Image 1 (cartoon, rainbow, N blue to C red):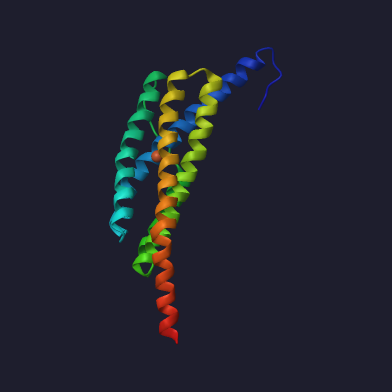
Image 2: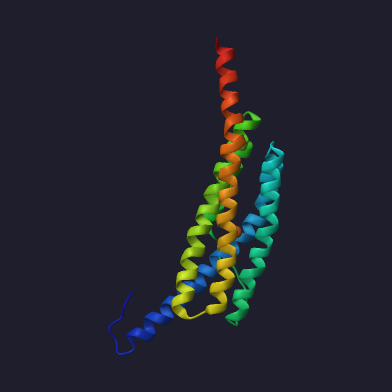
Length: 183
Ligand SMILES: [Fe+2]
């Protein structure tokens, strides 16, 4: 909230800095949660390409954790996460997909959906972080966060491509098989 004191502008800038640091802590925790969850998602995937895409993103995610730690270093702060409830929920939904009794191809389509929800959350979060870092003059943070944002966007696009070119079509095939069985 904007204050009307003489130091109003200073107060609101330190407020934004605090918000930025909180968002950073949230993302550090979110990425760490993902590092733990992605191997389970990869294991649940039947399509080799999907498994490969998830595994590749696992490696990227580990690098993204390191990048966030670097941002904390630039800020001369200890890299400490703060529980990200949103990521916990998104991962929980991913687990439901894994546990559901689905045909392989349908599960793959559902896994892509779950993974893309994660990516979209991250894209929104990094977009916000970058905007705030820019306003605060944290230039090193801006470039590091931009690198990660580009990876998240690329992952999202790769998943769309995989869904549209293969996985969704196979899931649709399962559906048709089922309809044939009904006849
Ligand atoms: Fe990420």
